[in-house]
Amino acid sequence: MKRLFFIFICLFLLTSCWSRREFNELSIAYGLGIDKEDGEYIVSAQVINPEQISGQSQQSQGGGSSSPVLLYEERGKTLLHTIRKMSKTSPRKIYVAHLYILVIGEKLAKEGLGDTLDFLYRDEEFRNNFYIIIAKDSKARDILSTATPFSVSPSEEIFNRLQYSNKNYSPTKATYIKEFITKTLTDGVEPVVPSILYRKPNQSGEKDKSVPEPSLPTGNAAAFHNDKLIGWLNENQADTYNIITNNVESGIYEIKCDEEEKNSSLESYYTKTEIKPIYKEGPKIELQIEMRGTISELNCNRDIDTEGYRQMEKKFAADFEKRLSDNIKDIQEDIGVDIFGFGREFYRKKPKIWKKYKDNWNEVFKTMEIDVNVTLQITNTDTIENSYLNKLRGGN
Image (cartoon, rainbow, N blue to C red; front, top):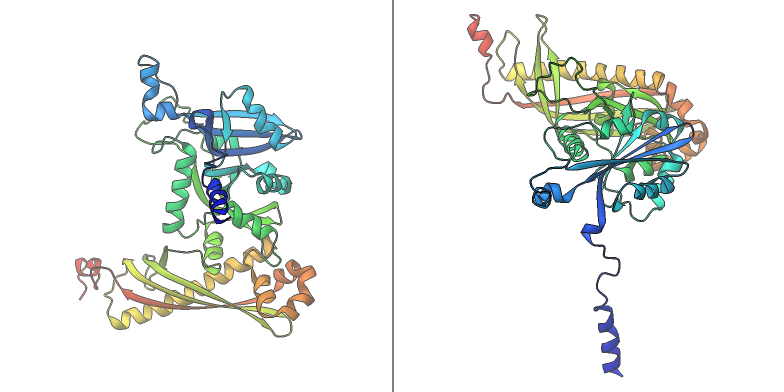
């Protein structure tokens, strides 16, 4: 009996990969674009030509060459049907499991992404580790058809730029599709995703080949209410959003000198925000923001000693509190929905208060009092303490 049981168990180890697909039978999609016109979806799939990338194409074609990426496009009433229609022009199945980015046209985003998200969530071939990005003032197919200088695939380059910018430029926040879907289903918080801007090719006929013309992630961010695009955050507002939601790895901020119209630069390497929900004659929020950074560019006509550090810390903290408060008020007035997740904090920490206000939370958010407190620690001024400019101009 034990022997039969052992043989039975071994059978499971001999099944191999039942769902295995041969590489030469697939068209690997790195980017997918979705637009909507006249009641129909327009789906654009950017796929890799593996033979061209590996160099096999030139050998098989006697020295000829073909594009390393191909763009397939179809129209249809449903997304699945539209993607399947691509088999009319693609010799291989469009395979989306290795997707880098999903680009959504602005028109479709304003109409609502409910049906699109439902399809992506249901289809077993789509994973949840690709970025979603909105094509601002343009269509998704325009973004995917743009040539890029540093990567074979435009989709891969956009993905890499988002990752790099996300780590080094505080207004940018790359958003995975899973995060976006989760926020559309969560009370007390609304989704925000980055945008991308289409740059038309140079039409002057005098193009400088050394200057690339790719589409680039912008500092603007798309603000949603549930699944619908309702507005845009400018770079300062997007930076404020990322600071409050703890999405800043590194940031560069300008500090104005007191005595003249000049600025110095502070590079933050640590930013932590604590959101404290308070109930006092209504819901309120207190933000405790801790920052650490270095003075990376000093254009003020003064040397910086220990006392100078402390003065700059206080000045920057005060200026930064005002900047954040102004941006928050603008978002409350112009966007009008809780993109920061303040409602979610009330739900977690003060559930009774949340229950009372949840049905009209975004109306509460518009007029909510929000106190901002910033604590800054300047750890060093990079390689030198005193200002070279001050010495050059005859300072002490």
